[in-house]
Image (cartoon, rainbow over the protein chains, first blue to last red):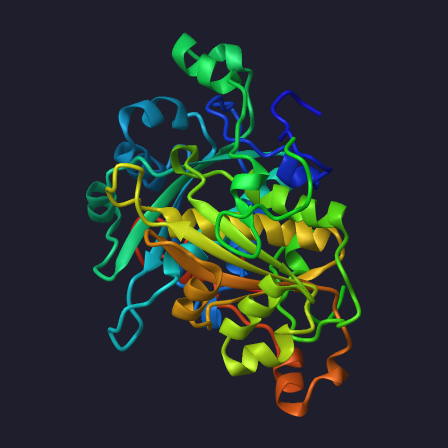
Length: 202
Length: 202
């Protein structure tokens, strides 16, 4: 159990408890084809409303042009550390059905698919860091995302490197205590705001 | 490996590969407090943009009034089978920041949190079935979901029961082949629509 392990009231599967979002990735690490496909399959087999699978993904491997274009769309702080990751994956959600009517729930389903990809990454001994801070218009333009699709996130995937390789400001964030809102303020029963009567906050 | 296991080109962690969304749940099964808290913790420790944790959950256990109110909000087909599940969890996403400005990405983050809950459910030997088909206004009213929050999904969680306990129409859906769009139509590189050059479709 690392100091980054989630502080849970009861035991949670290690693939979840030991997941966290680092900024220090090993710039020498690469992901082989078989592991890469396992990440894609984990996302592909996620559930979705009416099995619509409203997600698409743009996948860059460090050194290729897709990776560089996704990296270039990130905000400057993210760009600094994310360029050491082995993969950058942009997740995109459909906004409309085939008949042009609005497709609700696509962002929800896409988040769900990326979560499955992240679980598989951890099963492979990798770490992931999802980002919302990127230039959607730039990403759309450089990778040809068409109208009717909306970029949702960019996920950096790679092998963890020691935090002391980071500059001081990022190192502080890398080692800061992990926190979440208490169970009692997140899980309700009877009425909104009434804590579900189980458990103790960890 | 069951006939429901995802047909993947390469091996994927069993918690993902063996996940599917049944309709046949054991109406005698209950989830104990420790397991329930582990499901909540799995969701609580999900990542979110700026660690905003824009999710809240309403949690019903079969036999209690929260469960009944969530069940009553489901469409009639879902209501028929979901009432045998051990838990019904409604996931709700915040739509605004504290200052009233729009909160983007909350649905995405909420889907991600429910995915983590589902992985933990499978780690406990349970199954989950997420639903988008429910009456949001009815759920809002019966459980007091305030303005500024939007119900996203209801997840049934429980122990799998034999498919032959279902009526014929649901039994057919329970045993139909599981399908997903091919890898080549989901994962792109270089430009939108250009298949990422790895793997083979399973």
